[in-house]
Length: 380
Ligand SMILES: *Cc1c(COP(=O)(O)O)cnc(C)c1O
View 1 (cartoon, rainbow, N blue to C red):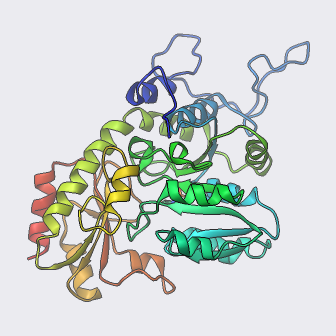
View 2 (cartoon, rainbow, N blue to C red; view 1 turned 60 degrees about the vertical axis):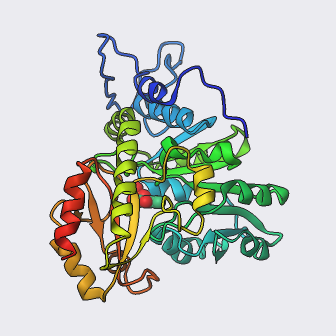
């Protein structure tokens, strides 16, 4: 599929797109407009188009334009968290619609379907999204949406975005991709045929573990864009101007961070695979990953900064290794400049299908030799 033609390259657009906020004193760093409301002139007009900050705000508008251009989309919508953005996609459907999700979908989305949207009359099937035939077998005449996370969390499974988009479009079904993990630096789902991209901007876009946010980017501005916009404005799960400013600032260095984190993840994965205490490394950049080829086709420029590994041992041994790490902080979340380790099973709770000996890593921007040394001492 041809790439959208932009006059500027990605890094330049990431920087310039976040600086489009008017400043009366010609400030280089964009100003933050905290105002909840905007003045109406004697003719009854809002001269800059801003009226009330739930509807629109200069910092939010700048962020929305920025993410839309980075994902090669037409329309962008910012929300107060990744889950608020994800919820808006499902809220745009109607009672009786059927959706298909990966069987290892992000754990909170699994709960959202079971605990909230089932009561609203959405029906759903969880399938192995890496198997297009399995997806095709659960299609019904009410299926409206297929949800993809590639790489998936925390098993790093890969789904064929182009193949699934072809299947979906043959049946007038929408394809949504949660692109939080690869980021637009490595993967552009809209260029591969998807209709909707979502992000938890809390992660790589924000990039410093100090802000929550989410966004939706659409390929077309049409009826779906109107529905999403009315959910955003009427339901009001919007980010604050300061949060938009922080995420925009993160976007300015997104490219540098993701490339470094990807390089660190690939090197650590290559080192971990040869260690006798490591049973398996789950990383699409390894040649023996079952979908390495598809990942290489759709993730341009690398396989991302996230990896999981299975320890040769039980839960106690796995947790004790996590406790021995000094440079990897034990915390949930990902995509920040610092390296994190997480025992995913105990965070997800009793219903989780995640193996007890799995540790999930989010690579930061530290020197790779320090990170490898840390693993050397932890695995003794
Ligand atoms: C963190 C995350 C979310 C949820 O985002 P929040 O900002 O925590 O609401 C959704 N999808 C993926 C892949 C995530 O990593």
